[in-house]
Length: 326
Image (cartoon, rainbow, N blue to C red; front, side, top):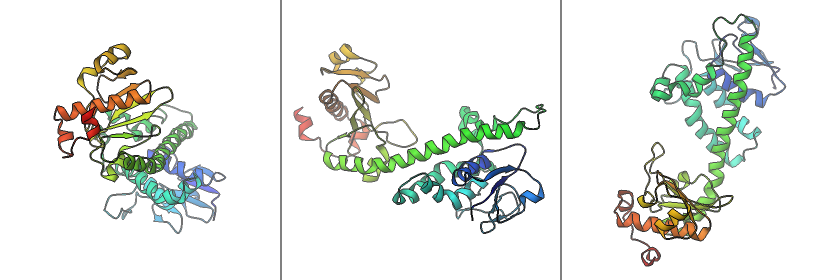
């Protein structure tokens, strides 16, 4: 039954009920959002969904709280917040309503749960402290959303609700953007896999456009690849491939002699007409056309091999004859 009311608690707000509200208001836009702790509102009824309040978790009765004794746990024993419970029961419907292909719903549901929902659940239950982010602790999403609460001496009785609505709009933008990124990775996967097949045992992956590529490369076990080349709006991009999700180390760096150079200086350093830019960090470069970008990539591969970079040696693969011939 479609609910007439979406009920969560009044007063100060946290990330879990805000993000739960993002999901539910998208699924049930005609429902009225109620923020209250009054018994007549937080008692289950056929006309409502109650979350983060009410002292019970009963999906059949559509009440999703996690503050009570015997609060629900995930299969691995980690705690749910209201966000995790709402995502568990309504997340797939939300993805379908967002236009995600049926074949991608389970994968996106799981990836969003692991990367976005679970950290909120753990933080809300005190099982994970934002302090683990070090200097960035104050910039984590739960903390930033709570900065929109009214200050302690705000006397306007409507201040909490105004803050909640402001935070809800921001929370919505992050949820939609994250899900869009996860969905895009799945769309890109088929294109990257085809490009990997086309590359064979070559060290350079050419893509038809910029897209997420590392997850597909890892999934395909294409450890031999070192660089990716693809067109942009007005030029071509050459980029390295990170060795891990949580670090910046590359399988191979661009040549040190190119670092920080542009245009004529870079052309002189690499001997390739059309070379236009190399980042000082040696993880990305640009060229004016495809031919120049591929030539730069081949030179970068050759140098990586000749200097014995560990990431290249680790693959144990022979150098392609086309690169040796150069």
